[in-house]
Length: 73
Image 1 (cartoon, helix red, strand yellow):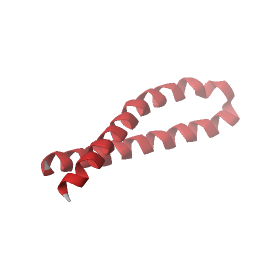
Image 2: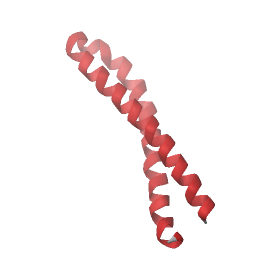
Image 3: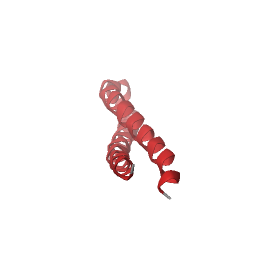
């Protein structure tokens, strides 16, 4: 049980960092769209597509950690 918790915690941390970095990149591109207009949208779409599974993995692994934490206490 403790091993599963540790693995899910590491997955949560790693995927959370990736999701945060992709979200920051998306915001940078959004700010660039004020200068470049709709030319930035094709660049935003791949970032959004990559962010979605990273965010889902982060939230899912966090839910596993929260479910296992009371059992390990």
